[in-house]
Image (cartoon, rainbow, N blue to C red):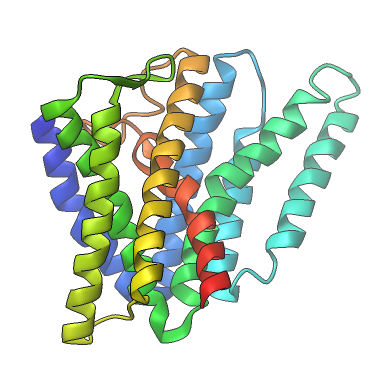
Length: 270
């Protein structure tokens, strides 16, 4: 398990950084693939509860949102969400049965927001902040990774007190603290390195520390939230795409929750 996690990280990290550096069409394609697969996994989890949201509606809507964010800076995000809602409600009407008329549209719209809209906010960080976008998006990636690694390794070495046994029994308070410490240390190192090399845009010191704490908190909340979804659905992993990690939702759960918080924080601060 550990070897598989490390191998996935060693392969995935440079690929992710390269795609982020390229931006444009490569970022749109990779983000759309993540959104589509995430939609498939989400719909499958819903089906274990005998809910029947449309997987194509969720996947297509999610993919369109991230492509819009990359190619058009999110100009059509609102209309796309409205279209998903209208299509979902209209589909229920044409089915001519009241069964699922509340649950199905709600699940479809939430699925598009969760798998597509959240990821589109990260794409906007890359594209909507001009030359600073690459450095800011890379910082988000680094902080999410460090939070995850800090929580995992510190929790494994020193974890004694359960953080949320009902949601995720393996997570510990010590691991959570480790995630915060690693994120803050990583943000400080990222700023110092960026200032000395000029390779990327850096936040001011107070912003860099607050941003690290915010990302670490949201990353762990996103992780626990997805764990709760899986427990509610009665599945161990959302998918099997990444050995040692599970599926797209297992690997990007923190990232999905972090992205909109990070984007709007940066919009307010910069």
